[in-house]
Length: 426
Picture 1 (cartoon, rainbow, N blue to C red):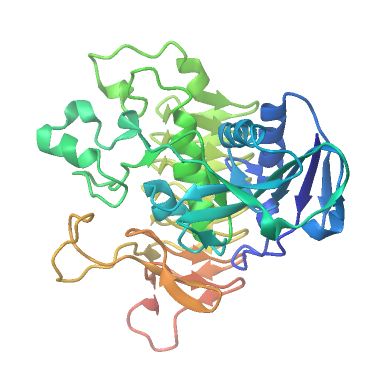
Picture 2 (picture 1 turned 180 degrees about the horizontal axis):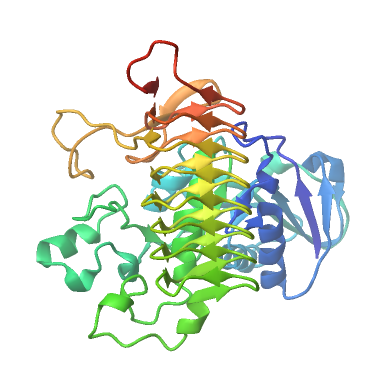
């Protein structure tokens, strides 16, 4: 098979990187694409890099797979697409498409996405052709869609709180989509997801989606076997899963205090240090990260060299870039490289009002909006923090409103004569 990868010329400005170089579950996106291709095709195939699809000219004889460099996809999705595409007619180009009616697509994929939509189908940057007789010119505009459902499958073993501790009413709430607030301080952590997923990354919000609901959550489905993975240490009536050792991967050189708690699926890179009473739950930590005493990290991804000083901070559903130091609580947010987040920096993640609660919200409020290509549009998230650009420093007392962005090299500091250390980023 011939495999081509074309460049979308997109850039995530906050992180100053193209999508292919973004870290998803501890690996660059381009490496995850290569792993998915290897898993689906069963052999190592060299990916040919092109600037545009038209650069290929004419499609070579045999099978051809073409994908964009910003597409996050799982091996299960690619395998499903190839099985369906190989059943189609030869000498024709086919495109992977996902129905916009699916909850996963509506909540996580379609918002902030510039992919074309036709007949309630969202077209992805994934194409297939099988040429048998002669080379034909490549023309992606005439590609025929192959609809692929992203199966909504509840992750009951990742509900917060665990279903085994909920009453009937709580249990009903827990099976609603992401926008529902279960009765927990860590709400909302109840979502529907699948192992068969695809997402074009065009915005920092997509980076959160690829790493958390599409990454950690869906990855957990490969381990579950009837045991509540996040809460088994506290449920005495449960047996530990047989593959419990597979849930936590600890690389060489790590130092973990005996009083620390690590709950899988979790990956710790080389030379990671975990301090006393720290808790790591379902997260990915890169090499040389430091989690100081008392910190709590849950459903988050750290690049190499992230430092959390000794404190009682909670880092929830967040992405922290290489070499950053975070000394404050953070939820549903993205932090770039080499940032300094001062103590008591407040990143709010919820827009409240007095309007009646809508169908899919428990406390009312409004969906968080973000900037996308010159416009301010809904993000798809009812709970969302902020994005902090590379090399940014925030002084103690800085307040960031939901969905806001601090560009690279920003500095928030006190003005002379201020009586309160309060900086509002509206």
